[in-house]
Image 1: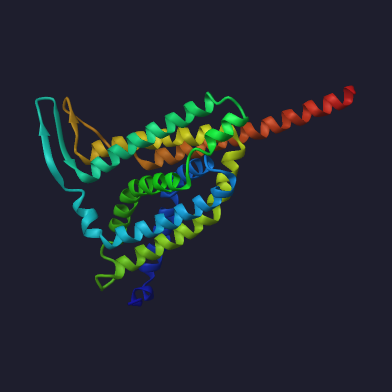
Image 2: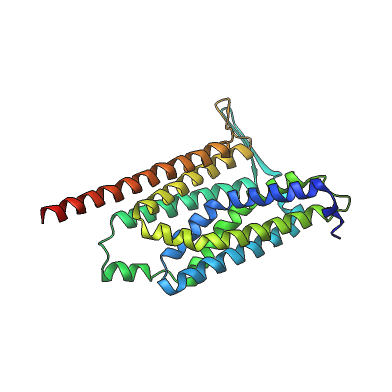
Amino acid sequence: MFEIFSSADAWVALLTLTFLEIVLGIDNIVFISIAADKLPAHQQRKATNLGLILAMVQRILLLFGVSFLVGLKEPFYNIETSWFQMGLSWQALILFFGGLFLLYKSTSEIHEKLDAPGVGEENLKAKKITSLQKAIVQIIIIDFIFSIDSILTAIGMTNGIGNQPGDALILMIIAVVISILIMMLFANPIRKFIGKHPSMQLLALSFLILIGFMLITEAAHLSHTVVFGQTVGAIPKGYLYFAIAFSLLVEFLNMKLRKQTTKVKKTVSNADN
């Protein structure tokens, strides 16, 4: 069953696939952090860990339904007019509505944070409105949306590896388990860090808006959408991750600058006294 690990190609594929799953899971961690942050403090860690465990179970079940996932790519309805063409598939619809959900969720969260009355009784009450079950349901829904894309990518990467039909499946399951365990190590520190820095919360929500827009664009691309003779292309994920990394770098520099400014002000204030 595990003879595949005698091949160097299998180990390279496993390492690459694990790294890919972690990278593709970053946006999932951001969403889980924001969803868990709305819970009472004693439930936040539980929601984060439980959300990731359920995400792992869900992805493994989806891997066993590989044929089902591949079938989602096939168009079931075609729309053709003089200026618009599209081949609708279930995969495209899942990505489209997932993108809309992220846009709605992120925009409403930003609106709530900007219009919040402050850290008081009303704000604490609003924070506890979201139940653990509701947070878990949101995490499972958004993970299902992200899983479709990452698992189909994994299928493409492991295609042709191993002599047995189940060899590629074993590699994908191990990669998913390892990546989720690694994410569980960092998810709670990331959640706490985002929760402590309001500017980082807004930046994370902005990332989700960007990801939501990318999902909608990818849905149009997978549907082979043509508008006025122009084909809707896919947004390379490398551009997205570069934008996120660059924004994080700028924010870290701003945080360091704010700390230095605060220290200087305290020094000047103590000298005046």
